[in-house]
Length: 141
Image (cartoon, rainbow, N blue to C red; front, side):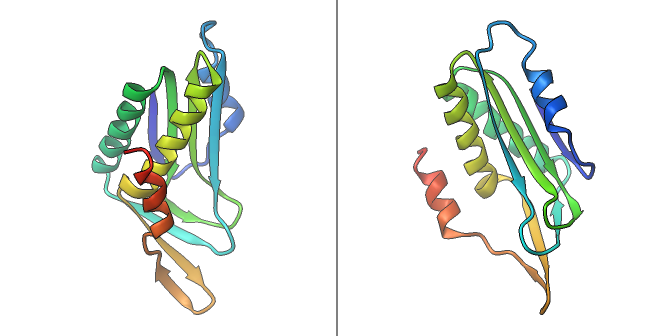
């Protein structure tokens, strides 16, 4: 399991390859989040953020047959089209990989302590939590 909160970009191909070395793995499902429209700055609380992400991944592992998992979340100044987050889940079967990947991403949006500030033409503004994200996470309860 790899959990990383970092400023540096990540290489999707390298991260997926690192997950696929076990011959029992039959599926890897992944999600990449990208910056849309405007530049943003992401802040986090070091230590707390990694613990929160680890707990989310452990919840996924208790629900589905997850053989390995990588979660990389970036922070700092990001521009449109930059990669923000990678969630990749390895499992014997695609159903478990897809479900766990979606669950982790839904919970990252609502449970991980990140703060986003968009740099809009009108000035900087903090991004508020979205009801749609809360609703997506609620379906897993």
